[in-house]
Length: 346
Image (cartoon, rainbow, N blue to C red):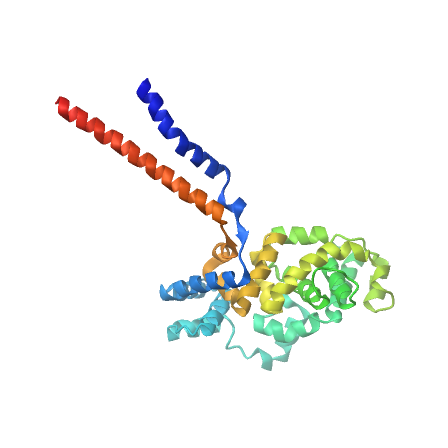
């Protein structure tokens, strides 16, 4: 009995430490890294992936499954990092990504891309053919006219497209007060609107944006507004757009530090508004490499690079490791002592 009590007194401290550690996981104590820290962490990760051949293997996998967007992102990253790739693999990836298409010479293809972004063959084509129009108020006005037609025919209106188009027009008119500049909000609203049409918004982020963009709309005045006959206040409550404008500002920062075309793909890595804000910090740290980093390292590794553990949690980890080591050594000593005693008896 005395031995059991003594053993319990030895086991209790490390077991309590384990319980405390499990009840307070690392994720709850994470702190945001600075932009320079994020850049250094991701730079180390890419260097390791290149030296281990992971970049080449990942590109080969993208080509094998026909993932054109991922192949294009990895090719761009390899070019920026001066990574030499096998000639055949590089050629196959370039063809898959549409880099050898003579789409600019085909006016019909470019016109189709400008009319419907889902028909764009590549991000490069989208950037040249569709974005010049979509980034203007005319792009937002066209989106509103499209939804007015749906409403008039009794169809299901895409209220997210309406909200984002109104946000873009409000930002252009500088009547929306958000944490970002009007240009940033406009770029973000356009990027989110086009990502919605392309299907690259995650369900979680789409739900959050749709909830924020569920504003009252005077459908009978939308055409007049699109034709600039009435002000924005005549068709919706501008104040109700503030929340959506804040999210659009984060999407705008993603576009600002990479490109609007890249932002259409990058938003697929954000499931919540908070992840969208973290995504903006990643692009601020990595610029135009962001798309390639996600394609190579994956969302989990990239997003982890934006966070770090505070010193007190690291100290707890060290304390726990020490307690476990002490427990194991104590148990080993007890076991050896028991074996020695049995040996003497024999």
